[in-house]
Length: 318
Length: 315
Image (cartoon, rainbow over all chains, first blue to last red; front, side, top):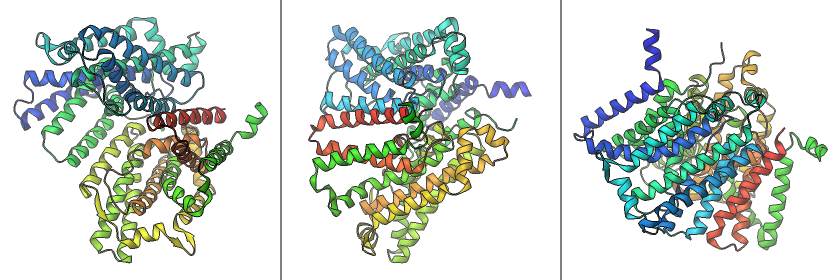
């Protein structure tokens, strides 16, 4: 009995179950919801959230109240930069990815330095950085959308590549594999967990925690920038607040995926399932043809229900 | 230098005050008519909602939690108040009933947050984000689109004078008195102990749960006050009101020298922090910075101010 309970409250199992239940619900409400091509569509949308959540996971696992609220602005920045570098030309795709990923990585490093060297709380630092990047976006674009995706990038994100799956899903799978390898098969990964669960102990063992944590914020920025490239590949163009809708969902995907916001625990596979579950939930709510307020109410209530199952904090009474 | 830092410890609001005075002088240089009563009054009218929300947010943060739902509480209180006033006809009694309904709504939202977080042990950031979605959904249920004007009696009183002194100034003074009152209650000491070292506070026998719920209810209450002020300013209902208040209120709290980790800081500092945020946008507006660079400048100054605030207050 106890064992059954442990398995049922395992975040991975729970997220997988939620996905199946939501798919069943969607199919019941609107037949064809769980059809193959529809599922591929849902996965494509989940991939963008999942890539942002990869960076968010690293920052959260790294501990000390790690959180990155600048991912939304950095997604928008990545999309704007990529769109302008590409300007619709296939030959410019690689430079576009390098520029978008490089600039957002550098901005992430600056946030990381603020957190580690100046010891500004991550919530404040990344929130402040989001404001600066948002301002830079307005200054760069002068308020009008600019830049186009190259046709090959759009096909890569939207059209089937191999086995009926678009290329972006393979990229996401590669990222998941890289995250697993980084966190479970390298000393760097173990250093991140060590730092996240007990920073002082990690320092005493000689880990360069400042550099490590700074790097995590850089990686989070880079993942957001790459997600921005995917966004512009998905929609063809971008606007300066296109990334805002991903900020809090990326944190929720991390929490649903079983990573404690206190740091030091969890892995990325849960977050992958969390991102998929969250995307399907939003899609089911759209399919239900409820009024907007009803959708909001159910979305909030489902989040709270998920919190009840496994997002809870430590008990004071031991 | 370290002596200076020592004497500032625990009085970080002095630094915020210095920043506020500097910004005020810059603003005065850029806008010579700043000191006329009408301009001061209109400034206070614009700043007041953030000041009130930031005061409420301070208590939650002092207790070691955070409230991202304040913006949605403001929206919900606004639509509840205008709807109740519209239902009861708009006489003085109806207006008072609407105000009472709004305040109760704010307190109920705070109670809901507090019970989820302090009793059911939900994670504060994600939970108040989720409850914010719920409160926002309810606001759209009560009033689907912006509109439904409040009677002239409401906004004329808010924009006018009571006993020869502008209503907004009365509200500001009452906010200061409320801060001073709460600062003298044992509640604040208990709250700061809870935020500083929760386990220790629990082990000394403090009722940590009810204390944290109290902080969330204060946040709901001050959000309700802010909503009533915004209702007086816009004179109508808007279910999307207050969207950015959650993040600006947290900035104001940090600018005022309150530690996000909890346990240290003051609501008075947050009040100054909120005024600083207001003055920053004033100065940028009057400094004739090209429109497309205004957000960037605001962002940079805010980030610098936040970094400065943290550097001065850290131990």
